[in-house]
Length: 578
Ligand code: ADP
Ligand code: MG
Image (cartoon, rainbow, N blue to C red):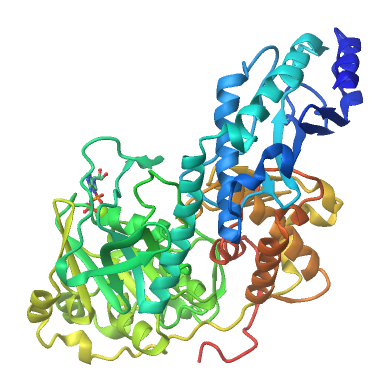
């Protein structure tokens, strides 16, 4: 600490580059500070620093960390505690550019595997950024000393010494995460695809604010007929709506809470923090939101089970386009989801192409089958479950066409669900599309897709730039940049954190490197890489230590690959689509 003080004193008024001499590691009372990388100027990405505490100085013995989930939840809790302490203790901007700020990765409503905070038996390590202050290009050493020698130790004392933290809240956080894991395991065991607890609060503040709606949120109450009860390790017995396997419809008038329920199920693949309102909402971990996404790129996907006889004989068995339509993009999204093991599709009428969902009797009479390239989802959704075991939850307020193929129908009325399966079945009678078999080829699991040497090409710069310098950036949750390549992920709705996009960027780089030595099997290789990252940590993906990554799911990683423009895909190796 004294060494750092002396170095800082010597820097007053010097040119910014002189900050470089700070790189190194310093002993503080109770922790070690490592300054890993000093930024080149006050506008550049802020300097990377790490704080390390031993298990003893962090008082780690205060918590029970016997499961992986608890450890991840503790890392999450500590990261949030650091963010709070920064807010209280750090003055923030002083000087040019970002001067004076200390930051940690941004935390949302979910508990994700991240690398901002790592907890091991040895102790705690936290990664932050520190924007070393300057006026123009001249160093403000006095402010830097205030940040590193006063503010930072105060943040560490507040947030990383467990004795100083509200231990009840901390334990509740860990218990809550563990309960959510147990709830998801229970789903599998009970043959359910999703669960929404009585009392859950589903609505959010706004489309861009994932925090719970503050006032006037009406708590969820399960219909009697669908109510299930489950005993969780910490919360004990809870009750709520169990969504069974098969085809489930959510119906009801406009603005009655249908999409809100579906969105909660989409996010139910993740653990949520206590107080979120959705901490007892769970879906199967491989549930995938399926939507229309016109404009997306599609590379060699067999959409023929849904779309055939396109004008001018366009190939739909290896459908490739830079600009898909609503229906072709939705078909590609389903086929891709199936190829990576999706067992639950979540579909909302609001984000679907109508002609992809249904074709009613009148339209059948007017436009003959030969002229209509689309076999709508209503004709395939039963088969998806009966033959492939893939369930779906579909929001459909505008038409009763799906009644005949649904196992369960839930009606939302003033944000309250009721079970209307029986009347819906009566209304469907012996509807036509139960009998009318589709003439298009049956659905398969898509086969494994192989990528040729085109992946590195799609990632443009990778051949020219040495691996450690490929620039990977995430623009919010919408856009991922890897070198020259840009991937539009705005419509991949189950990305919840920009750290996941960054991790996807580094994972793509890995895949690109391995594909340079020949074709790779995308699904298999992506799965292996992710399993490795989950086991060994996210750090192994990056050339230097940085704490901004969060683990994505397999589906989101593949979604990014599938949206790379210029991707070249070889025909599936096995007869998967037959
Ligand atoms: P739908 O899809 O049926 O048209 P939405 O799910 O979009 O309806 O919900 C309409 C509005 O009602 C949204 O602004 C949403 O935030 C709000 N909302 C949904 N569920 C609840 C609830 N349980 N309590 C209070 N407001 C809700
Ligand atoms: Mg809606």
